[in-house]
Length: 453
Image (tube, rainbow, N blue to C red; front, top):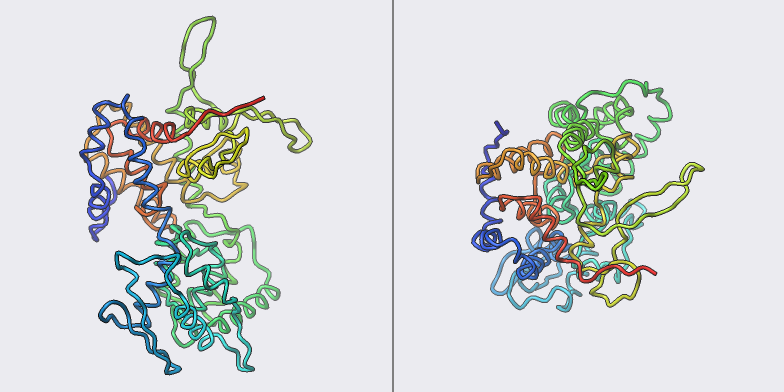
């Protein structure tokens, strides 16, 4: 039985996916060999979604909704300094993110930053040049997580507002409870009286001083730390001293690695190994051989992606790896020996679980990410569906609920349709052969074969 939620999230998600048109998926499924003819339609749909909400749109929406009032044709903004502005409706059909004037937005951005992040001596604590603000307001992509936190203080975001930016714009988890700096930011942004960059820096310095004076037992991390941390923050941390005590006690848990995420990943990894086989020609006889290691698993998961054998040095040893060909953007008209593709597979394959990454995750040399978990869950679920021999709409909903429950257990936000990678997986799940649909969409999006010579 899959874990269910009481907020109708799964149903809302299903509506967002079916908006594209289930009929078109079913038409493709009826004649899978004709997928190549429909591929541009799928690719354009996924490109239109974008990887996440454009940062420029999100910043303008935030400024309009928090500091302005809706009026005919746009938003009226009157700031604390008495200046008044009129901002064009960012939702209007003729709105041009990259070409419409942003000078008033820039002035508002600077005024908010000056009000909340000027020190007692009159120094501006967050200095973002005007050209940089202009670029951010026009950005059609997202930004680095560290930059997003700086912007959140510059624009005086509350914790709930910042959570929306992390999930809707970056398509990542909300505040990371394994990063003390993000916990301090959460504390500041949850308390209006200290929601400034100056207070954030002050508390961070107090924590650094406390760390130097402490002698934590690094051999005793807490099991299920993320769940413990969330509960502690909601129920026990009431004062700044409570926060510092919590941070110092939990230093062993601030390694940047979620044990919960690692455990979930290894459960899926073990299942994937057991359910994966590779073709082998033995004495002229075709047979399927059981996968036994990370390199074989990577091959089984991505047989449809062109590969090349690489020779490199690692730990004073010569390593030969049959991994993915580096992907360049064919739309830019580049001429190279690398395979050229549409932007879609480039963005999706650049973070695929290649053999080296699988091994690094298995041996805990790198932290497990959201994309690792979502793809492994999808891969195992698809293989289980193949074994079962049947696939229904209830199976699709089960995947959504099970995957969301897993992400929540790891302190991450649930599946998000505006994340192009996750949207592709959810589209593939509308087919009775999910992984084959995923493979075909990616495979047919390659523009030409690789050239070697």
